Structure formats: C-alpha cells, structure tokens
Length: 385
Image 1 (cartoon, helix red, strand yellow):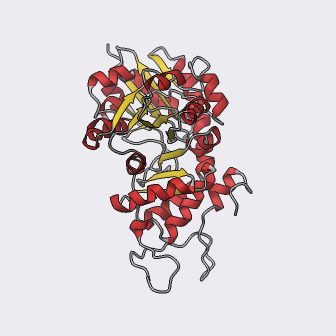
Image 2: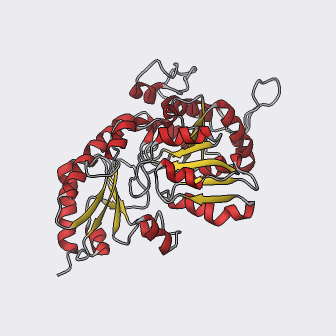
Image 3: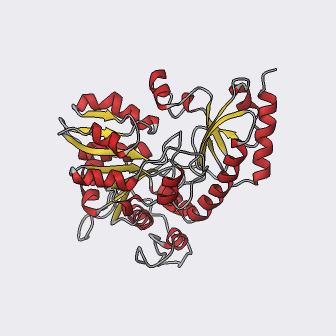
C-alpha cells in the first residue's frame, strides 16, 4: 500500500505488514533467525544491520504514519536519540536544545557531550527568538520536544523549521507525547522525528523500543552509525510493536478524550494548584497546540497543595498505577523529580519548573468515572489533618 492511499487507522492496521505466503495467516509471521544466507542474495541480512524482514516491514509502517520516506527501529527511545545526535554532530559542533526536554536526553547531553567536544546550549524560553539567540556560528542542530515532558509546553514547529532552514541547521523533534496520530512534524518542515516507541506506539507497557523517521538520505547516514553502536531490537519485540501499532489510532483517541475530561476536572479541584494540559484554554500555548496538533493528547501534569502528602497520595491509589513509564492503556502517575528527571540536579529541575509536588499523569482508557473516584479517595486520604 502507498503512504497516502489510506487514512490513519488503515495505515496503522495494514502498512508494513508481512504476508504469510505459506499458510495465509492474518497477521505478520515472525522471522526469528539471527543468521541468513549470504551467497546469491540481493540483501545480506543480519539483525544488527536493521534489515531483517520484520525490521524492514515495521519501519515502513512507522514511515507511513509520519509521512516520511524511511524509518528505523531501535532498542529504546534513548538509543534512537543518541544515534541521531551522534550521527549529525562531531567534535567542534554546537547544538541548541529547548530547556524543557525529557530528563534522559538532557542527561545524555550534559554528561557525555564534553567527551566528544560537542558544545551545547539550552534555550531560556520556547519562542523562536529564544532559539535564534542561542544559535552560534558552529550550530549544526536544533533539538525540540513538543508537547514537552513533563510540563506539556508547546513549541512552534513552523517557526523553528523556518529559522533552522534559514541558517542551514538540522532539526530533530521528540514526538513521543503527541504520537503520529496527533502530530506529524515533517509537514511543518522538521527534518527528523524520534520516538520512544515504548510509549504510545507500544501502548501496552510490555516492550521497550525507539524509532526514527526521516528522509532516506538521513536514514542512510544514521544507519552507518547504528550498525556500529548496535542498538537493534529483537524481532519478537518488533513483531509485538507492529501488533500494538494496529490499535494506535483507536487508543490515542480514547485516551485523549479521557484526558480532556480529567484536565477540566483537576483544573477545578480544591486540592490542585495548577494543571499543565495544552487542551485547557487557560494554557498559554492552547492556540498554538490547536493549530499544529489534531488533538491535545493524553498526557498532563498537575501540582497539589502543600496540605496534600504526595507520597501518601500515591500509596492510596487503587486503580491508577504509580509507574515509571507512560502511554499504556492503563492510567499511570509518577513524580518526575524522582523518576524521569531524577538525573537532573535540583537546580536544573527548579529552572524547568519541576517541583517535588509535580505529578505527571498518563491517562488511560478506563471509564472516566472510575478514574475520578480513585483520585478523589486518594486525595481524601492524603490530606494532612
């Protein structure tokens, strides 16, 4: 099937599937071999070369969803991110990153880039002017994440792409929180899209993977780095991810619908001081999010009043799981200060607006009434008397 022939849910279901020519099964067969024939073949296949049948097929599905020429699947989101950055940055280069990004990405930059003599700057804000101010003569790449983790801030994709192209700078976006269902950055001029496929693409909290989608030329360059660093994924997990993406559109739509209701509920709650969700009209980036997204997503974060014991609140939850990851069909919550952004210094967390009382909420597909009741009873128990 061609990338533009079908609508999103059809692409999720059918793009990049392998046909079972022998038994005519309804789902893709799994090719678990780690060793393939090398004589008299067009392609010398090897798992670390990212070209096993299942790897190639799933890459086509993700490329179709992101409207790119090609894609690659990695063993984790950080494997995808690190391979992209190390492909396009060398000693003496400079990268501009938005200040509000996933803690693991920031830790990679701050803890490792000095070893490669790669310079970096974090923006003061998220306007295009903030990125422009941070650009230096040796800047080669701009890295963004929108909506951002965990404060759900929105970056203007068109403005960043326009700025970067005027300076001949490459752009990379972490599109994990939006997923290709709600946002396709390539259409706004962004060059490379990365995902933690562990999250919405996987969606069932049972696999770890990463993805990159971009032009064939850029994929070819990333491939040369990737076969050396060895961040490939097992074909069984590849098969599980392909299976999961079939329901991506349906899952994200249901989760987004729930998240909007939850955000409005929390925004009016007496025990909550602030809610971070781009779908609220009070969110400073509401209009921008509405322009460049096809929905506001299922991620939000909120802060509780001082008289709510955060640890007690988490322990009192019955339905919502206190869990490290996000985007599963089940609702989960965590404290960014102790998980996703724990590697940052307390000063860096405060600079980003990440307080010890900030709770990140990945809204699932449960009945909305059950989710609300669980939050209510946990707040009642956690209230300091």
